[in-house]
Length: 180
Length: 249
Image 1: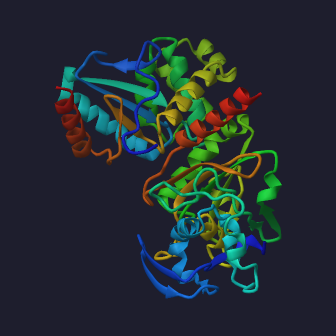
Image 2: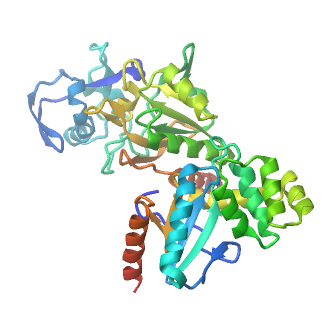
């Protein structure tokens, strides 16, 4: 909560990780699929991954603000349902690329497009089997001092600046220098 | 004790010659009342009275309603009760202090007061303004964390100087499930009582208080005005309080 808040839950096997978990830079995002700022940040992260390549490990955790974003919780559960079929990142990307179409039927449509087992996917959504996991992510964010979406952690420390490419890159460079 | 929702002025117990963080008071006569403009002296006056008497004054009794100049002379109360020492760098009332009572409108015809939360833990989130970006994020976050607060037997209220109609529109727009109280008339009186009013801006600080079942402040945090403090500090305070309760049981 104070400046320099740090990640309360270390990156581990429960996480969705892109890149080498032992990479120089670990970037964790707490995000909401319906949040327009997270939609902007999605593109920034893609650019960071392009620029930093193997030096970057990216982790995404759910932080749905479901009272103001009525589709955010279900979208988060949809990504988790895709994860049980090893297609988390495809769904994650698809959701951020279609932020304005997150109704239940849209989500099922995306599952079809990604060639998931749609019956299983739908059943998991309807019975909210992933709600608890999403809440765990959310609470780990609260305990880490997440105060809005998106919130980023660079090597475990909250990034308090803006999330444009230049700010994130310079913060990452500063953190890596500290680590080196 | 007069109506403490109108906490404003302090009756001076000794002639004051005092140099403090916020300025200098010279030859201020005993028995006179320091007015609103001098509100920043409050925190130092508590220390001062403590120093003069060698005892701890009861802070809330020293702060008097502006309408009741004939309130008990604070000389009488110096030496009685307890005092919060406000050791933190912020001026806000510190843990250990009794939470000043309040009675504020939550709708045009309903009020909420501190005693409505008797037997519960109360979280007060003072914030600068409805609709501002940071406040919106902060209230949206607390709205989502509300079930966790309830799990600790805690209720949450938000307080700003906005009026009830503004609060109602803001709460409806953001689907807030906790009350927003209007510290509207006299403006900022409750924020002043908690020492979290920004005279220069006419708004509340972004300040958090956790108040226990007995009405005692157990945690305080004042955030820089533009920084959303998140909810982790509140949850830590609630957990610590639970642990204390368990240890005592």
